[in-house]
Amino acid sequence: MKRIMLLIALALTGCASNSGVVARGADEYFLSRQAATGAPGLGSLKADAYTEANQFCGTKGLVAQVFQEQESKPPFVLGNYPRVEIQFKCITKESRPPLSSFYTK
Image 1 (cartoon, rainbow, N blue to C red):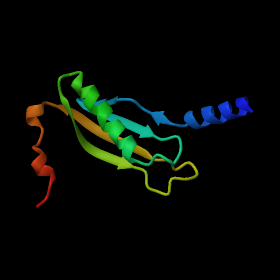
Image 2 (image 1 turned 135 degrees about the vertical axis):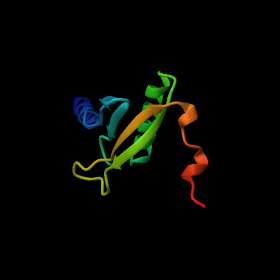
Image 3 (image 1 turned 30 degrees about the vertical axis):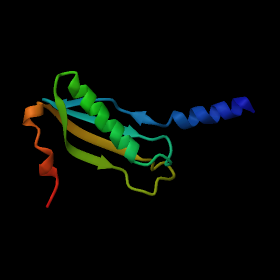
């Protein structure tokens, strides 16, 4: 019984994927994350992707600026698991737009 449970757990965790940071060209990068099941939703995947992008840029003394984002649409069943893909650049903190520019009045 323990072996069966272990095999099921391994099968479920083996389906999750993370591309890591992939260079797309001059200072442009791509990153994707996909859950192993439909249970976790997109929130944590997005947060993980943005965190990884900022950590990658942080090693260069820069910050990530996402310029394109795609995510899977529900329902999250039968292989359509939560997935997020982001494309970003590494920019200086000074060249980052102010947060107020992201809010509409």
